[in-house]
Amino acid sequence: MIDKTDELPVKRQCEILELSRSGIYYTPVPISAKEMELMRQIDEIHLVYPFYGSRKIRNELWAKGYDIGRDRVRRLMRRMGIEALYIKPRLSLAHPGHVKYPYLLRGLEITKANHVWSADITYIPMARGFCYLVAIMDWASRMVLSWRLSNTLDSAFCADAMEEAIAKYGCPDIFNTDQGSQFTAETFTNILRSNDIAISMDGKGRWMDNVFIERLWKSVKYEDIYLKSYGSMAEVRNGLASYFKFYNEKRWHNNFDRKTPAMVYYNSLPEKQAAA
Image 1: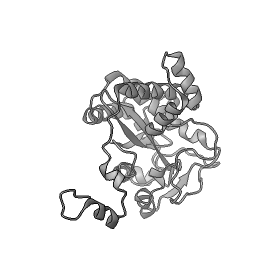
Image 2 (image 1 turned 135 degrees about the vertical axis):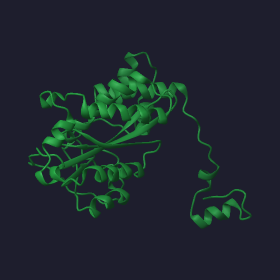
Image 3 (image 1 turned 45 degrees about the vertical axis):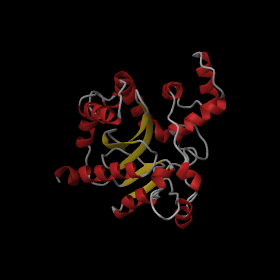
Image 4 (image 1 turned 90 degrees about the horizontal axis):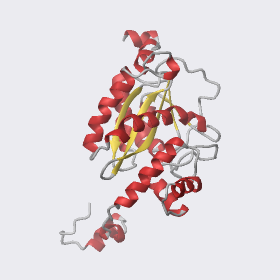
């Protein structure tokens, strides 16, 4: 957007575009190996104790021999996009300018595929750097319908995953997420509205609704990511393509009595969708 070789001075270009010059001249500082190791440790602690906040995670790091303060832990957690899972007014970092939607799942019995879908984002460590993973999950079957990787926490990769899920599996009646800015952005909610999908968002006291997908993240990381130590996003993408096929079609789910998520999904589709 800003062309430093243009005859128009950078200062004037920034004024026209209403941009700060400080952002134009800033050169990002690479994350050090020590920071990457700390983020990996924080991620592992969060998976085991998702209800731990920055203070308890700092204490766990102290027990492992890391000399780190709570402010640094809090900063790294923000960068990773994770926070403690417990009852509180806000379950994720919401955008003040985005529309919030009511919670529609209270008292709802969810037993059929494509009744309710949900989504969440997690941090993925790599041998060099990190990225973010979003997954769209069918609530009744726990089947992963689509997923995407990104090196930034924007809404575009979430929207791409949603469009792919709809193209492959049709539309759910209800789509439920937390109030994170990626899911309240118009880029994302426009897809839901244009397909007549009811939008539901977790409110105060609905922390349990994240448990299903938090269990998915634990499986993904302990059964694939941590074992493989991928070196790049391309490697992560190839590895996860194989893992999610295994997760959906081969891996028995504890809640479904020797059935895979794919078995439960296709066996519980409403008749008109199963016949389509």
